[in-house]
Length: 150
Image (cartoon, rainbow, N blue to C red; front, side, top):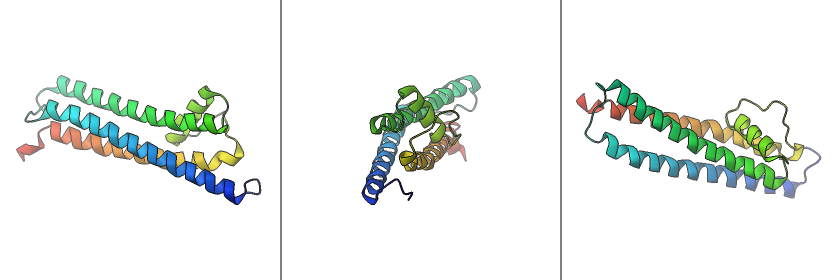
């Protein structure tokens, strides 16, 4: 804890971090459930291993859907930065959030010093959501390619 933040403010920031993390995880779970439901009927009982173009289109649509889910989650964090006054400009907040969520690191945009813990939390949660999406995509592609033939 630095000298600028009192214990009560630090606890409030921790609560905000946990709330944002939970909101991110819940929204990701809902997005994956929606995507899974839409894909299940598409691949049920079918194998696309001999249909390379159709398989590529379905996988591309799935990746795009996952990207939209991540963008929504990034917007949650960006909105929080603006609402809390950590970053004044919404465009800067979105850029900062994308950079933090993906752990690239924002260049040229800074966050108010007392809100750095929130950014750290986002950089912890973002890669977990990306990993979850990756696991989902691997499972889906395996099912789509007809793993039932083994």
